[in-house]
Length: 111
Image (cartoon, rainbow, N blue to C red; front, side):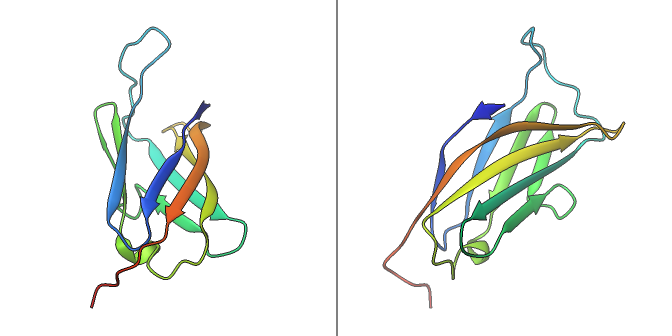
């Protein structure tokens, strides 16, 4: 599992792309796979993102995760942990990446 530190500003629309390669550097076959990303603070609401709900998209071997402003807009926490899992067509589960997630608190508020 790759350890990656992510951050975003509270209340912003943001996203990240992950390129998935096999051990020999060839493109991974992601056909029919489901991806789920969870962001879990010690205190506060768990954020769930998925290909099932449209926040995660797959284009060949590039997995793009988008987090909309409404997911963090009211958050009080500043640090969480996260991970990204892939469930293959055959039902095999693999955690691909994870790490720390920093939520930078903004000063301005959208009206």
